[in-house]
Structure formats: structure tokens, C-alpha cells
Length: 171
Image (cartoon, rainbow, N blue to C red):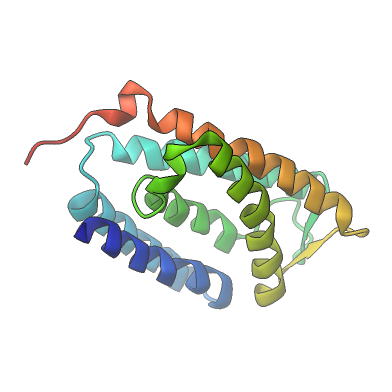
């Protein structure tokens, strides 16, 4: 139980830190510390590093597609997501199978919660951070994010059940 609590606390620190702190170095340092703590003390699966890498690649690819399409706009003018958002994906990957484990109980629950809270997270992050804007009219990127997240979160529930990710490390 302590693993889930520690994981939840670390992610509850990571999200606002990634969104609110203006220093990529600070965000990267925290993300590295979180990842080390997660892999060493929280995760009980030997291939957890692979899980984090796969989820990060999926998330970075999705965000790159959304930014490259112009649905979300990086204020730097880059067609790529800002570094804070890419680092947030590492932290999110560490939480998916631990403090967000309840999502694995139902693909429908994951789809509904993903469709609601995925876009809400982008909206809130963009509003608080100020370096990301939604294309106008806002409804178009919101609809696209609802669809992406309503599909992505259930995909992660399926992925989490694959043998390569389910082996347990024995202490």
C-alpha cells in the first residue's frame, strides 16, 4: 500500500512542478529523482523501465502530432511540445500502473476518465503554464484531445496486461 501512496504523492508533486516551474533543469532533475525512486523502491516489475519508455514514446508521439498539426501551439513557435510537457510524460508513466491502477479495472472507465480528464489536464496546464495555446476555435482541439485520450487510456490498460509488463520481481 505504501508504494501506491508514495507514487501518488510523487505524481501530485510532479504535475504542478512540470506545469508551474519555469526551469527545465529543475523539472528534469525532479523527473530523474522520481524515476529512480520509482524504479528502485516502488515498481515491483523488472521491465518497468520498458513500460515508462513505451508510455513516454506514445505520449511524446501523440503530443508531437497534436502540436505539429497546429491544434496546440507552443509559444516558442516550435512545432513540437515544450520540454515540460515531454518530461510530464515520464512522470505520468510512473503513475499509470500504481496510483492510477484503478483504471485497469475497466476499459470503459479508462475511456470516460481519459476523455474527460485528458483534455482538462491540457487545458489547465496550458492556462497555468502560459507557453501553450489551443487553436481557435477551441472546440476543435478539445474534441481531438477527447478522442485521443478516450482511446489512449484504454490502450494503456490493455498494454499493462501484456506479459512483458506483468512479470513480478521477487525481492
